Amino acid sequence: MPELPEVEAVVNGLQNTVIGKKIVSLKAKRPKIIVGDAEQDLGKIRNVLRRGKYIILEANAIIIIHLRMTGKLLLVDRKVKERKYVRAVFLFDDDKKLLFDDVRAFGTIVIKQDQQEYFPIQKLGPEPLLKNFNFDYFAKKIENRKVPIKNILLDQTVLAGLGNIYTNEILHRAQIDPRKSANKLKKKQLQKLISETKNVMKEAIAAGGTTISDFRDLSGKSGNFQKKLEVYQKKYCRCGNKITRIKQAGRSTFFCAKCQK
DNA sequence: TTAATTACCTGAGAGC
DNA sequence: TGCTCTCAGGTAATTA
Image (cartoon, rainbow, N blue to C red; front, side, top):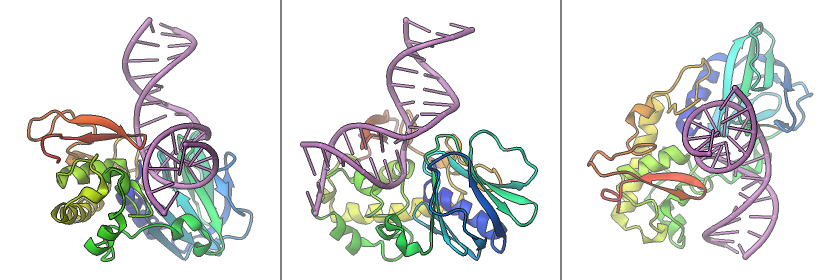
C-alpha cells in the first residue's frame, strides 16, 4: 500500500523517464478510473511532482494520480501485453507506454487544468520532512483533539503522506500508545513523535519504500524498508513482549503495551 | 466542529 | 474440490 516513501520512489522513477515525453493518448480500461477530460491534447510532460500521496504530472493539463491500496505505475514497451488489472494506459510518442495497474481498482486519475482546482490537494497538511511540520504547528493542531493519536497521524489534513504501516512504526519508535488521546500527549512525547516521523520517512525513502504485498516502483522493483519494520504485522517486540493488535479507524494497529505508554 | 461509520474493490486465505 | 466468509486499507460521503 503506497504511502509517502513509496510514492516518492515512483515519482523519482517518473522524473528520470517520462519528462519530455508527449502523451498521445490516455485510455481508461474500466469506468470511474479517470475523472476529467482525457480526450483533450495532454501534450508533453513538463514536470512530475509529489504532494502527500498524490502524483502530479504537469502537461497541457494537470494529471493527478492516487495509487490508493494496490495501484502501480509501470513504464513498459508498447508491445508488452497488459495483464487484466491494468486500469488505464498512457501511450507516448515513442515505443513506450505507462500502465496504471491496480488490482483493487481503488486508484484514480484526475485531470484538471490547474492543480489548485483539486480540492483534496489544497486541504493537505504539511509534508513531514519540511520545516513547517514542527512542534508549534503540531501542538496547535492537536490541542483540542481527543481522538487517538494514531487517527491524527492518518489524517491527511494534519500531515500529508502517512498511512497505516508508517504510523504504526512511528508510534512504536516514539514509544507512544496509539490509543492515547492526542491532546493528552506531553511536550517531550510530541517532540519525540515529530523527530521519529522525520527519521522513519527519511529511512524509508532511502530504502525505496516498503513492499508488504504488491508495491513496486516504476521498473517493477520492490522496496526494502519492510526489513526494518518493528511492529507492523509482527508477533513479538524487541523487548520480548507480545505485540498487541487492535482495530482503529477501521484499520489494524500493532503496538507493544510494555514499550508504548 | 468533531468524531464515527460505511462504501468502494478484489484476491488470498481460512473454515467447512 | 468448491463454496462462503473475512480481511487488507485510503479516501470521500454520510450520519451522529
